[in-house]
Amino acid sequence: MKRRNAIKNLTILPVAGAVVGSSVPLGSVMASTAACSRAKRDLFKELGLRTFINAAGTYTAMTASLMPEEVKQAWLDASEEYVLLDEVQDKVGEKIAEMCHAEAATVTAGCYSALVLGMAGVLTGNDPKKAGQLPDLTGMKSEVITQKSHNQGYVHALTLTGIKLIEVETVEDVENAINENTAMMWFLNYAGPEGKIKDKEWVALGKKYNIPTMNDMAADVPPVENLWKYNDMGFDLVCISGGKGLCGPQSAGILMGRKDLIAAARLNAPPRSITIGRGMKVNKEEIIAMYVALEKYINKDHDKEWKEWENRVALIESAAKQIDGVTTTVSVPPVANHTPTLNISWDINKVKVTRDEFLDRLRKGNPSIEVMGGRDNSVNLTVFMLKPGQDKIVAARIQEELKNATV
Image 1 (cartoon, rainbow, N blue to C red):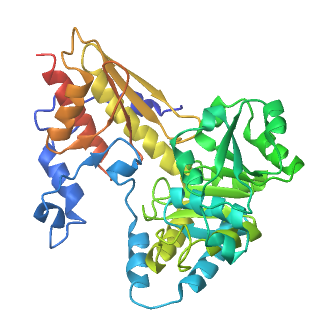
Image 2 (image 1 turned 90 degrees about the vertical axis):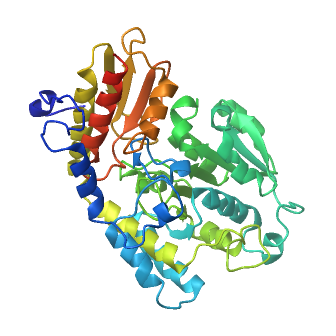
C-alpha cells in the first residue's frame, strides 16, 4: 500500500481530551461531526439506544452502512406516490442490468433473499405451480454442487428451497457429481481463494455441462469492477448486498444474471402470494433507493476515496504506535471487504489490557467505538464506514486507552 510521505510523519499528541495533531478539544470535534445531521427528535436517545462510531466494517449486526443524502432523499421521494411493484422492478431492473453488464436484474430483500429467490427460479423455471410447491421438489431437480471450502453458513439460503448440497473439491469430483438431479453449481466468492477450483474454471464447468452457476459476492465491492466482473465472466446468476459497500438500503440486495432466470426468480417473489419468497418483501422505497445508491457508487471517484482511506488508516496507525509495546500492520483482504485494514497488537507485559477488555473500554467510552477483535492481544479496524472527522476521534480514543493501560 502506497502512502504519502506526509502521512508517515503524522504524530499524535497526548489525548486527555485533545484531538490528534490539534489543540481542538475532542468534544468539539465530536459535536461538529454530529451537528450537521442532528434530528429535532432524537429517537435513539428517546428509545435508550447506544449509537457508536463504526470502525469495524459493514456487519449486519452493526446495521452495515449509512445511506448518502441522495439515497435517503430517493427513499423519501419514492414514499410519496403509488406505483405498481412489478413495474418499478421492471424499470429499475433494466437500469441495474445495464450498469452491471447483466441481461436482467431485480432488487431483493438483501443478498440472502437474492440467494433464495435465484435458487427458487432455477428450480421452478416459469411454472407457477412449481413456484407454489417449494420446498417440495417433486418433479424438479434437487441437488446443488459446491466446493467443500465454500460450504459455509450462507448455503442455508439455498437449502430453504429443499435442495441437497453435494460437496466437491476437484474438477473430477464435479464431473462425477453431475447427474440428472443437478440443478445448479454455487460459488461463494469470498471463499474463492480457498477452493481448488477458481471462478473462471467453475463457470467453464457449468457451461460444459449446461448447468447454471451462481456467485454469492455479498460484500465484495470495492473494487467497483466486481459489479460487472462476474457477469462478464459468465456466471448465470450473481447476488450482492445492497447495504454494505454500495451504501444502499441495508434491507435491499441485487440479483442479476440471465433474463430467463431473473424472470423465474421474480415468479417466486412478492407480490406473488403463494411462494417461498412471499415474506421477502422489498417495496418501492428500497428498490428506487437501491438504484440511486448503485448509480452513485459506480460514478464516484474511487481512486480519491481509496487515498482517503489510506490517510485515515495512517492517522490511526500513527496514534497507536506512539505507545511503547504496540505494533501495527496494514493489509487489504483479497476479496470480501477489500479495503485497507489495520491490525493493532500489543505486548501484554507493557500494555496491561486484554483484547476483550480493550474492546469493552472502547465500546463503553465516550464516544462509543466498535472495532473487531483480532488474535491474542490485538484488534482489527477499518475506516470506510467512518464519517468525516471520525478517524481523528478513533485515533485519539485508541491512543488514550492504550496509554491508560500502560500506567
